[in-house]
Amino acid sequence: THEDMERIEREGRLDEWCADNMKYFADTFGKENIVAAHLHRDEETPHIHVTLVPIVKGERKRRKREEQTKKRYRKKPTDTVRLCADDIMTRLRLKSYQDTYAVAMAKYGLQRGIDGSTARHKSTQQYYNETKKLADSLKAEVVDLQRQKETAQEELRRAKKEIQTEKLKGAATTAAANIAESVGSLFGSNKVKTLERENTALHREVATHGEAIEALQDRIQTMQADHSRQMAEIQQKHRREIVDKEAKHKQEISFLKTVIARAAAWFPYFREMLRIENLCRLVGFSDGQTATLVKGKPLEYAGELYSEEHGRKFKTEKAGVQVMKDPTDGTKLVLAIDRKPIAEWFKEQFDKLRQSIHRPIQPQRKGRGMKL
Image (tube, rainbow, N blue to C red; front, top):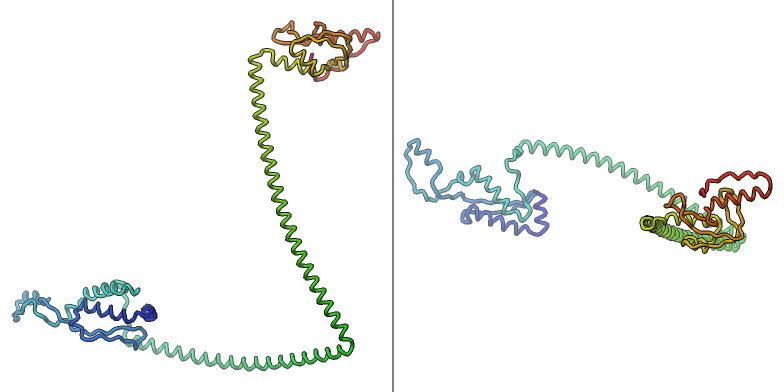
């Protein structure tokens, strides 16, 4: 294409392209058959005109047909050199030239045309008709451009007048300002200048304060962001600790349940001992006294004992306390006072109290606590 040839010329490879073309023609048609080759640059795209003599060797293609028609021709040797353009300009050879030429010119970025294209060259008459139409169109565009040029010139003249008017107005304004300044100087220009300096200083101070405020706002935002990040980290750490503690607590509970289950399996009275321990604490025994009783040792006790059933305390001067097997159920234990189950002992003490005051005493309503 025209663009490809422009690129080759711009890259300074036009001479190299010409040399490769001559090599291709010499290899294809024989160097001795090339009469002349000229580079033409008078048109839009540089191109080469090559003149060659179609000298070939070999038997003529028409000979077989002539033998079939039995015409008598003078026989010639098959290797005789002869002049024949038909042999080198056949349809197949022309197609082959296009293929081989494209291969030779590939290093320049030139590509072969479409193989089997239906495109046809324009006739001379068609070319001239299109050229005339194009010329007429260009003339119309020239007339339109001339009209646009005249309009632009008129607008330019108008703009110059407006600029001149604005300059005059500006000069008048400047003169008025100078006059006002001169009048002001007559009526205390020092005060005006002082006020202007103070005003400038105030503006500068306001700007400085504004910058300081912006800096403080940026710092506050940074501190808030840091605080939010730290709080988020602390909360996340706290949540992790809670989760870890809950997991650990669950493990401990599971372990204790396992231990209790094993202890209950190994020691039949283990759960009963736990119940007796709670009962001892409920009626008023101290931790040391409770430990003595749970170990199965007897205890002499003087003091008050609380009955949840009667809702009051009963005093004893001296009583023997001990944990014993339940006489009615050998799998259970009972807390005995003076060898009586504590429930019976509380009942006796309540009856004695009621008889001592010589009037009936209604027992208090039972609570929902542990039944003794």
